[in-house]
Each structure stands twice: as structure tokens, then as C-alpha cells.
Image: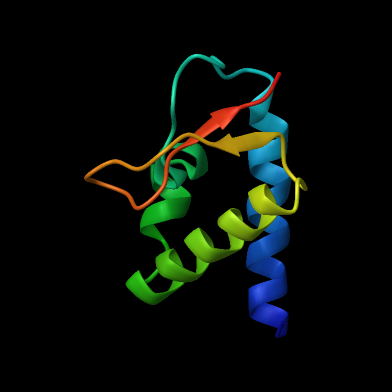
Length: 83
């Protein structure tokens, strides 16, 4: 992983971990909604795809307190907070 990917990975991991305790575990969230609009819209379309892959890897590796909650039409994956 290069320096940019590593910094994006760390930023997403820290942010979603910090907000997870305040989320409703019965609700599903897109990565965009988890990241917040200011951060999300600062990313290029390529970086948004990369962010999605990084989040998916973090969830699959159990590094963040989220689980896969299916797919929706707006986002390839949605997530649910694990309390």
C-alpha cells in the first residue's frame, strides 16, 4: 500500500471507529454517509472507489466495528454498526 492509500485507510478507519458507538445498529449506512459529505466530496471518483475497497477490507478483516448489511442501488455495499 502506498503512502496515500495508507493515509486514506487510516483516516477512514479512525473516523468510522469513532462514530460507530453513536450509530443505530438497526440502521444501514453507506460509506458516504459514514464518512460525511465534506470528506466524501473531497475525494475524486477514483478515490471513492479506493475508499470503498479499503472499507470492505477493514470489515472483512474485522478491523472496524461494522458488518456487511447487503447492497443498495446507490452504493455497492451498506454497513451496519456492531455494538
